[in-house]
Structure formats: C-alpha cells, structure tokens
Length: 202
Image (tube, rainbow, N blue to C red):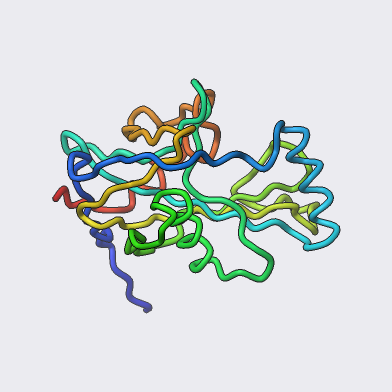
C-alpha cells in the first residue's frame, strides 16, 4: 500500500507590525471598464490563445489570526496582487516579476526575496464573461483564461512600496470566508485552501 503523510504543511507567517508600507507612482488598469476587459481578452485570444493570469496570496498575522494582503481599489473593489503573464513567460518568473512591479520601488534595488510555497488553486474562465470556475466545464474545449493562485512566503520584515492609487489591506480569514458579495468567488474561498497549512505565528 502506498504511504502518505497526514501531517499538515507548516508555514511560518509574520506579524503585520513587522512590515512597513511606502508609496510609489500610481499604476492603472489596462481596461477602463469590464466591457473593455472582455473586448481585449477576445482580441488577444485570437493572437495568443488562452490568457494566463497569476496571483499571489501573501499571509501575515495579527492577534494570531491569519490575514491575507489585498489591494483595495476605490471603496469596494479588492484583488490579489498579480496580473497577466507575457506570452511564453514561465509562471514562477512571471509572478515574481509582477510582485516586484506591484510592491517594490522602481529602482530595482529593493526587490524582495519572494518564496513560492505552493499552488493554492486554479480557476478557469470558459467564455468572454465574468463567471469563473475551479474546473473546466466539460463542454468547454478552449477556455479563455486560466487564473492560477500561489501562496507566497514573504521575508519576516520588509517595506512594501504600494502604488499611490491603491491601498494594501490585511483582511482576516474570517472576514473573507464565503463573503462572495464583497470579495468575489476566488478570494472568498481562500480560507478553505489555507486550512491545509499549519501556520506558525512568528
């Protein structure tokens, strides 16, 4: 009989107070509206095929409760740090590039030593529409977007450089859980995926 471990993977996470938050030049979305987003997706699919998006879950703790770092844009829109891969770009190299573009200063002297722990989940967009699923529907042969979410370990202390038009907020897992109306289906299900880790609060 094959053997396997029932032990949870231990991951060290650090207190939110260990981190400082500076500001840098604003970053703007590629698309002015949801409609524009799907027009661009349709046009690029004809050229490059399926879009590959990678996002990072950065976990810290406060009062010994895991918190996930999220970008807040405006008053009510939240997203994970990440973005679109370049055509042919490696996923690991791409998520590190995007995190440095989003959360470090542009002089490249302050790049952070990111460590990819695991792939948390993969979501699929079957059509040029909002719905995404954690599986490919059986009637879909050419999904339009793959959205892969990684859990990333940040150093124990670092300064994040946050675009001035974003806020970087730490959301406790109990607030995210099944809160689809605020955070959407991907972020609101993260607590389920994070439950497989034994967090060590350093």
